[in-house]
Amino acid sequence: DLSVLSAENSIVFSFFGEIGESARKQSELEGITYPTLQNCLSSISSQLRENDILLLSPGGTSWDEFKNFEDRGQFFKNWILSKFYNDQAR
Image 1 (tube, rainbow, N blue to C red):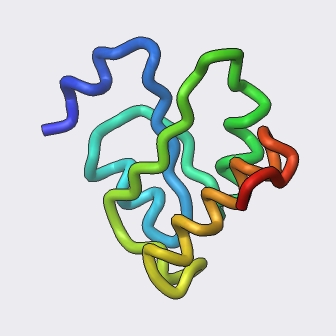
Image 2: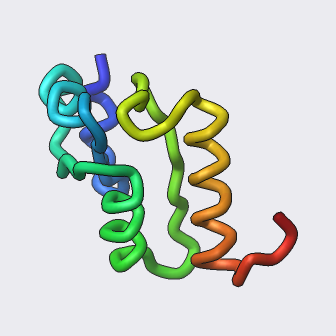
């Protein structure tokens, strides 16, 4: 039951990919569904403020976009580094 998470005003839920809309509906959490992780991150990054936390916590597969969870994690890491740390320390 994820409903306890929706009570947190500071948590924003986003869904992406082929199963994004299905995951949003099944979780019963309010959020936006994006076609890709890149679209999702680009949209979210424009809303981030200093000291905000961006957590990638996938609850399903994303085989439509990545070959495995490691590939997805590496994409996320590289995106964060390039967006916020100017490609430092990959």
